[in-house]
Image (cartoon, rainbow, N blue to C red; front, side, top):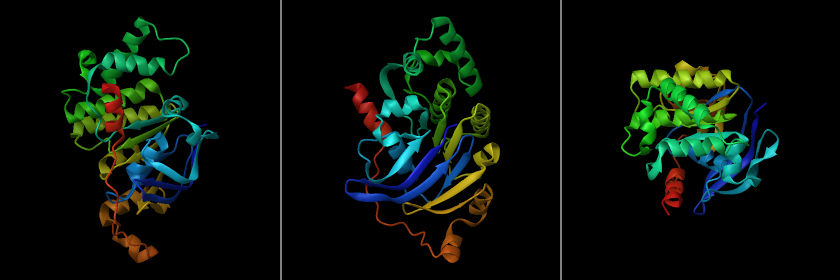
Length: 271
């Protein structure tokens, strides 16, 4: 069972509080649509869960499968089964995609994967995400189109088989065919028992993956929770009804300059 429990989470960036007491529970096999206007803390939540060093957790707790996530290093969180698909996957010059994927797989295994098994797993994965397997000799995401980068994120998910998958606008920039491939891959991973938290501003992906839960984040707090029907209401009505029904202002408060996790990671690799 993969259960994520977030309790009273407060997160600051450069002394500016972004998350202001987030409470959220995602159980095994849940698919939660994380909704909310831009700049209200959704990506900050993902970065905090994965351990971005510049997101300072000042209060609260995060547990995954009963383990204290905040005591784990970033690699330990990944090995525990947490996975984040980036909204803007980075280009990493000098690192071949095949080498990156092999190292990622081996970091989750006690015994290194054999060359024969790796070849078959990789070929099957590329087929599922609609990419040519000759891309594995190219540097990671370098020269990839936006859609190819997103499919490469999905490929990593399929290979690593995480317990909790966080999708940060994985559908942005995708055409209809690519969207269908991504939706099918998510559904396949769900069948394996993975839980999902998906950020998107479009109903199309949600219509493919059918979330059973939804949460709306406003100014660093979870303002409204419900089932998948919340997605349809937001798609039709926007967010103004929240102020009318709950007395919660949806006006964006002052926010700190955003920090991107992948940029920080890329600098460390290049060095």
